[in-house]
Length: 139
Length: 113
Image (cartoon, rainbow over all chains, first blue to last red):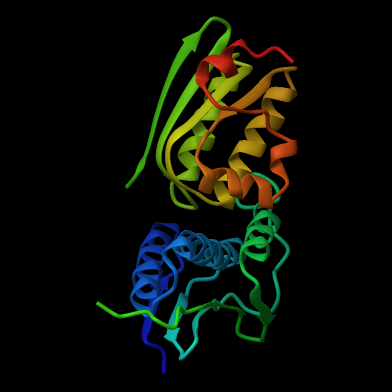
Protein backbone atom coordinates (compact mmCIF):
# COMPACT_ATOMS: atom_id res chain seq x y z
CA UNK A 1 0.00 0.00 0.00
CA UNK A 2 1.18 3.49 -0.81
CA UNK A 3 2.43 5.63 2.06
CA UNK A 4 0.39 8.55 0.78
CA UNK A 5 -2.05 8.49 -2.11
CA UNK A 6 -3.61 11.44 -3.79
CA UNK A 7 -6.37 11.63 -6.38
CA UNK A 8 -7.30 14.87 -8.03
CA UNK A 9 -9.62 15.98 -10.83
CA UNK A 10 -7.55 16.28 -13.99
CA UNK A 11 -7.28 20.06 -13.87
CA UNK A 12 -4.14 22.26 -14.07
CA UNK A 13 -4.81 24.07 -10.79
CA UNK A 14 -4.27 20.88 -8.77
CA UNK A 15 -0.84 20.02 -10.15
CA UNK A 16 0.89 22.36 -7.72
CA UNK A 17 -0.75 20.59 -4.78
CA UNK A 18 0.54 17.25 -6.07
CA UNK A 19 4.08 18.71 -6.34
CA UNK A 20 4.01 20.05 -2.81
CA UNK A 21 2.65 16.82 -1.30
CA UNK A 22 5.15 14.66 -3.21
CA UNK A 23 8.09 16.79 -2.10
CA UNK A 24 6.93 16.79 1.53
CA UNK A 25 6.47 13.00 1.63
CA UNK A 26 9.79 12.43 -0.17
CA UNK A 27 11.60 14.63 2.34
CA UNK A 28 10.08 12.71 5.21
CA UNK A 29 11.00 9.39 3.57
CA UNK A 30 14.65 10.46 3.54
CA UNK A 31 15.16 11.45 -0.08
CA UNK A 32 18.23 13.65 -0.17
CA UNK A 33 17.56 17.37 0.11
CA UNK A 34 19.56 18.03 -3.06
CA UNK A 35 17.24 15.77 -5.06
CA UNK A 36 13.94 17.18 -3.80
CA UNK A 37 13.85 19.81 -6.54
CA UNK A 38 14.08 17.02 -9.09
CA UNK A 39 11.31 15.06 -7.39
CA UNK A 40 9.10 18.14 -7.35
CA UNK A 41 9.76 18.86 -11.02
CA UNK A 42 9.36 15.24 -12.17
CA UNK A 43 6.04 14.82 -10.35
CA UNK A 44 4.85 18.13 -11.74
CA UNK A 45 5.77 17.06 -15.27
CA UNK A 46 4.09 13.68 -14.90
CA UNK A 47 0.91 15.27 -13.52
CA UNK A 48 0.90 18.05 -16.15
CA UNK A 49 1.20 15.42 -18.85
CA UNK A 50 -1.67 13.42 -17.34
CA UNK A 51 -3.85 16.54 -17.11
CA UNK A 52 -2.94 17.40 -20.72
CA UNK A 53 -3.94 13.93 -21.94
CA UNK A 54 -7.31 14.27 -20.22
CA UNK A 55 -7.90 17.76 -21.55
CA UNK A 56 -6.82 17.06 -25.11
CA UNK A 57 -8.98 13.97 -25.20
CA UNK A 58 -11.89 15.89 -23.66
CA UNK A 59 -12.02 13.27 -20.94
CA UNK A 60 -12.98 13.94 -17.32
CA UNK A 61 -11.72 11.76 -14.53
CA UNK A 62 -8.89 11.85 -12.08
CA UNK A 63 -5.14 11.62 -11.82
CA UNK A 64 -3.80 9.30 -9.15
CA UNK A 65 -0.46 9.92 -7.47
CA UNK A 66 0.87 7.16 -5.22
CA UNK A 67 3.89 7.89 -3.04
CA UNK A 68 5.49 4.82 -1.52
CA UNK A 69 8.31 4.73 0.96
CA UNK A 70 10.04 1.45 0.20
CA UNK A 71 13.03 0.28 2.16
CA UNK A 72 15.71 1.75 -0.05
CA UNK A 73 13.76 3.60 -2.73
CA UNK A 74 11.07 6.20 -2.77
CA UNK A 75 8.57 5.26 -5.46
CA UNK A 76 6.19 7.63 -7.20
CA UNK A 77 3.45 6.47 -9.56
CA UNK A 78 1.34 8.86 -11.59
CA UNK A 79 -1.63 7.28 -13.33
CA UNK A 80 -4.14 8.87 -15.65
CA UNK A 81 -7.58 7.75 -16.81
CA UNK A 82 -7.26 9.24 -20.28
CA UNK A 83 -7.65 5.93 -22.12
CA UNK A 84 -5.26 3.98 -24.34
CA UNK A 85 -2.22 5.81 -25.77
CA UNK A 86 -2.30 9.47 -26.62
CA UNK A 87 -5.26 10.49 -28.70
CA UNK A 88 -4.04 12.78 -31.51
CA UNK A 89 -4.53 16.34 -30.33
CA UNK A 90 -7.77 17.72 -31.72
CA UNK A 91 -6.73 21.22 -32.72
CA UNK A 92 -3.93 21.01 -30.13
CA UNK A 93 -5.96 22.45 -27.23
CA UNK A 94 -6.77 26.08 -27.99
CA UNK A 95 -3.64 28.13 -28.33
CA UNK A 96 -1.28 25.51 -26.95
CA UNK A 97 2.31 25.96 -27.92
CA UNK A 98 3.86 23.07 -29.78
CA UNK A 99 5.97 20.33 -28.29
CA UNK A 100 4.79 20.62 -24.69
CA UNK A 101 4.20 16.91 -24.34
CA UNK A 102 7.54 16.11 -25.96
CA UNK A 103 9.29 18.63 -23.71
CA UNK A 104 7.59 17.22 -20.63
CA UNK A 105 8.79 13.71 -21.33
CA UNK A 106 12.25 15.05 -22.20
CA UNK A 107 12.45 16.73 -18.79
CA UNK A 108 11.32 13.59 -16.95
CA UNK A 109 13.72 11.40 -18.92
CA UNK A 110 16.57 13.80 -18.24
CA UNK A 111 15.84 13.98 -14.53
CA UNK A 112 14.92 10.47 -13.50
CA UNK A 113 17.24 7.50 -13.85
CA UNK A 114 14.75 4.89 -12.76
CA UNK A 115 11.77 5.57 -15.00
CA UNK A 116 9.06 3.49 -16.62
CA UNK A 117 6.34 4.86 -18.87
CA UNK A 118 3.58 2.43 -19.78
CA UNK A 119 0.13 2.63 -21.29
CA UNK A 120 -2.84 0.38 -20.66
CA UNK A 121 -6.47 0.35 -21.75
CA UNK A 122 -7.53 2.68 -18.95
CA UNK A 123 -4.70 5.17 -19.30
CA UNK A 124 -1.00 5.75 -18.83
CA UNK A 125 1.26 5.09 -15.88
CA UNK A 126 4.56 6.74 -15.05
CA UNK A 127 6.67 5.03 -12.39
CA UNK A 128 9.79 6.67 -11.07
CA UNK A 129 11.94 6.15 -8.02
CA UNK A 130 14.78 7.75 -6.11
CA UNK A 131 17.18 6.37 -3.53
CA UNK A 132 16.54 6.99 0.14
CA UNK A 133 19.56 7.76 2.27
CA UNK A 134 20.23 4.93 4.71
CA UNK A 135 20.77 7.17 7.68
CA UNK A 136 17.58 9.13 7.16
CA UNK A 137 15.75 9.89 10.35
CA UNK A 138 12.12 10.82 9.98
CA UNK A 139 11.29 13.88 12.02
CA UNK B 1 2.57 31.06 -5.09
CA UNK B 2 0.97 32.49 -8.19
CA UNK B 3 2.63 34.06 -11.20
CA UNK B 4 3.48 37.76 -11.28
CA UNK B 5 4.19 39.65 -14.48
CA UNK B 6 5.29 43.20 -15.13
CA UNK B 7 6.66 44.86 -18.23
CA UNK B 8 8.77 47.95 -18.87
CA UNK B 9 10.50 49.44 -21.87
CA UNK B 10 14.26 49.94 -22.02
CA UNK B 11 15.15 51.58 -25.33
CA UNK B 12 13.71 49.38 -28.08
CA UNK B 13 13.56 46.37 -25.75
CA UNK B 14 10.68 45.28 -23.59
CA UNK B 15 11.61 43.66 -20.32
CA UNK B 16 9.11 41.16 -18.92
CA UNK B 17 9.77 40.52 -15.26
CA UNK B 18 8.37 37.17 -14.18
CA UNK B 19 7.97 36.05 -10.59
CA UNK B 20 6.56 32.97 -8.85
CA UNK B 21 5.79 29.64 -10.43
CA UNK B 22 5.42 28.95 -14.15
CA UNK B 23 3.57 25.69 -14.52
CA UNK B 24 0.66 24.10 -16.35
CA UNK B 25 -1.78 26.34 -14.46
CA UNK B 26 -0.01 29.69 -14.71
CA UNK B 27 1.80 29.36 -18.06
CA UNK B 28 -1.25 30.50 -20.09
CA UNK B 29 -0.95 33.93 -18.39
CA UNK B 30 2.63 34.25 -19.54
CA UNK B 31 1.59 33.12 -23.03
CA UNK B 32 -1.12 35.81 -23.14
CA UNK B 33 1.38 38.44 -22.06
CA UNK B 34 3.89 37.49 -24.75
CA UNK B 35 1.21 37.29 -27.44
CA UNK B 36 -0.11 40.71 -26.40
CA UNK B 37 3.35 42.29 -26.59
CA UNK B 38 3.95 40.89 -30.07
CA UNK B 39 0.51 42.07 -31.18
CA UNK B 40 1.48 45.52 -29.89
CA UNK B 41 4.56 45.46 -32.09
CA UNK B 42 7.08 44.68 -29.34
CA UNK B 43 9.43 42.29 -31.07
CA UNK B 44 12.53 42.54 -28.89
CA UNK B 45 11.78 40.91 -25.57
CA UNK B 46 13.89 40.24 -22.50
CA UNK B 47 12.29 37.81 -20.06
CA UNK B 48 13.76 38.31 -16.60
CA UNK B 49 13.42 35.00 -14.74
CA UNK B 50 15.34 35.91 -11.60
CA UNK B 51 12.15 35.93 -9.53
CA UNK B 52 10.94 32.55 -10.83
CA UNK B 53 10.72 29.85 -8.16
CA UNK B 54 9.56 27.04 -10.38
CA UNK B 55 9.56 26.35 -14.11
CA UNK B 56 8.32 23.27 -15.92
CA UNK B 57 8.02 22.16 -19.54
CA UNK B 58 4.74 24.02 -19.99
CA UNK B 59 6.65 27.21 -19.24
CA UNK B 60 9.41 26.16 -21.62
CA UNK B 61 6.78 25.58 -24.31
CA UNK B 62 5.42 29.09 -23.80
CA UNK B 63 8.91 30.60 -24.09
CA UNK B 64 9.58 28.61 -27.27
CA UNK B 65 6.22 29.81 -28.61
CA UNK B 66 7.19 33.40 -27.76
CA UNK B 67 10.52 33.00 -29.52
CA UNK B 68 8.76 31.75 -32.65
CA UNK B 69 6.38 34.69 -32.58
CA UNK B 70 9.09 37.37 -32.28
CA UNK B 71 11.27 35.66 -34.86
CA UNK B 72 8.41 35.85 -37.33
CA UNK B 73 8.96 39.63 -37.06
CA UNK B 74 12.74 39.38 -37.03
CA UNK B 75 12.69 40.07 -33.33
CA UNK B 76 14.50 38.49 -30.39
CA UNK B 77 13.70 36.86 -27.06
CA UNK B 78 16.45 36.83 -24.46
CA UNK B 79 16.34 35.33 -21.02
CA UNK B 80 17.92 36.51 -17.79
CA UNK B 81 18.60 33.71 -15.35
CA UNK B 82 21.28 32.84 -12.80
CA UNK B 83 19.43 30.15 -10.90
CA UNK B 84 21.02 26.76 -11.31
CA UNK B 85 17.82 24.76 -10.82
CA UNK B 86 16.09 26.72 -13.58
CA UNK B 87 19.11 26.63 -15.91
CA UNK B 88 19.25 22.87 -15.47
CA UNK B 89 15.83 22.50 -17.13
CA UNK B 90 17.04 24.45 -20.15
CA UNK B 91 20.12 22.24 -20.35
CA UNK B 92 18.20 18.95 -20.05
CA UNK B 93 15.95 19.93 -22.94
CA UNK B 94 18.75 21.36 -25.09
CA UNK B 95 17.14 24.80 -25.03
CA UNK B 96 20.34 26.53 -23.90
CA UNK B 97 21.22 26.34 -27.60
CA UNK B 98 17.95 27.99 -28.60
CA UNK B 99 17.75 30.89 -26.13
CA UNK B 100 20.41 33.48 -25.43
CA UNK B 101 20.65 33.37 -21.62
CA UNK B 102 22.15 36.37 -19.84
CA UNK B 103 23.27 36.98 -16.28
CA UNK B 104 21.72 40.44 -15.97
CA UNK B 105 18.98 42.55 -17.52
CA UNK B 106 21.58 45.18 -18.46
CA UNK B 107 23.58 42.57 -20.30
CA UNK B 108 20.48 41.27 -22.13
CA UNK B 109 19.26 44.74 -23.06
CA UNK B 110 22.60 45.78 -24.53
CA UNK B 111 23.20 42.51 -26.38
CA UNK B 112 23.02 42.82 -30.14
CA UNK B 113 24.18 39.53 -31.63
